[in-house]
Image 1 (tube, one colour):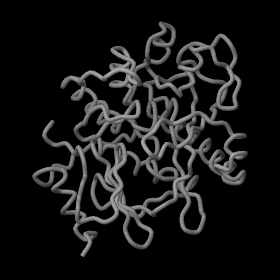
Image 2 (image 1 turned 90 degrees about the horizontal axis):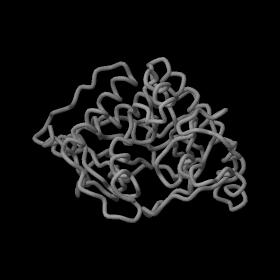
Image 3 (image 1 turned 60 degrees about the vertical axis):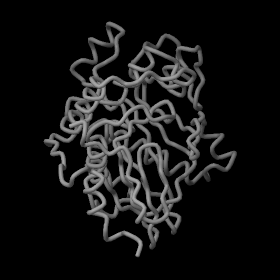
Image 4 (image 1 turned 135 degrees about the vertical axis):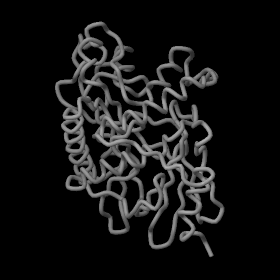
Amino acid sequence: MLQRTLPHARIPELPNPYFGKVRDCYDLENNQRLLVTTDRLSAFDQILAVIPWKGQVLTQLARYWFEKTADIAPNHVISYPDPNVVLGRKLTILPVEIVVRGYLAGTTSTSILTQYRNGLRDMYGHRLSDGLKDNQALPEAIITPTSKAFDGGHDEPLNAEEIVKTGLLAKSQWDEVSEKALALFARGQKMAAERGLILVDTKYEFGTDEGGNILLADEIHTPDSSRYWITEGYDNAFRNGTRPPSFDKDVIRSWVVERCDPYKDKIPDIPLEMIEKTSRVYIDAYEAITGQTFVPDTGGATPLDRIRENLKSFFAV
């Protein structure tokens, strides 16, 4: 299993490459873009590990959610030429990442739990009351936007007033994306609850097409963009002050945080058993969220060979 990984999708025959933290992308003609989801796991603004099947899980799980939420927010997807690949509309990504949170949770420096523990009560344009406990449900879902760090830098907290005042988004754009984000989150929470899961928080990325229309981009409600807890174990964990059982990359993030300050220290090598466990978490997440059995695509000598074959029609002549 550990040999069937996709650490990168560098394909020289494809034009106009852009390599992100997790996705390797290629801009085509006619305002189209190929997005190849690799098995890289990113956290703390760096790559931590390569997780078998992760890219396929993310692509197929995002597909599930895109199809279930298209009535709320139109998205960038045109087709799926490979289990790890989306052919999408090329968008101009809005410079604000929309993070919606339903619980006082998180491990990163921009999470509301980290800031709350540090004594902050006013954050992202919201006022949180004193006396909240770790992982407690908020009275209502809130949006905690951050700047979109396109150059691999660190995202910074924002609020609605700053976003409009500085011109990052027009007021009409902010109103549209915030309304859609809250509606998407509500749909996600409802569907997750029906599957015995809690959608704790998530991030959305939006972009504009050549006509200025706002479309949902990237991914939606995957274990990379979202935090899921298992409903059955939440109450007991909350009472005991422990971390609820989860379906997200906090498995490795929490392991790292217990051993170092990931923003200052060298991160220890991730042990093989943690990589295997995380792969299983992604697969379990797919099956728990969708109710479908995950079927890994083992075509080709390697995942990259399979992807190259499936993308031949897009190769530059």
